[in-house]
Length: 41
Image 1: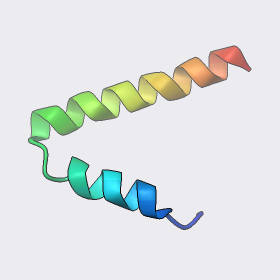
Image 2: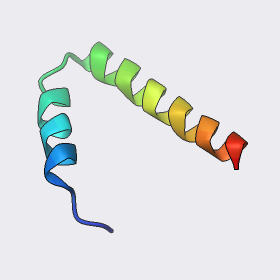
Image 3: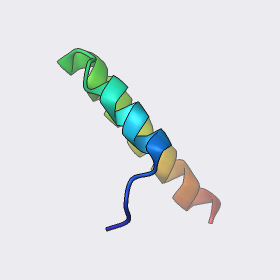
């Protein structure tokens, strides 16, 4: 697996401070963005 960039590490650190519900919403949106990328390809 690729090494995390400083930007990804920073986003992850901030995301882990969110509530469980907020992290779930973030995960859902990130997955949706991956699905959108696949549809475009």
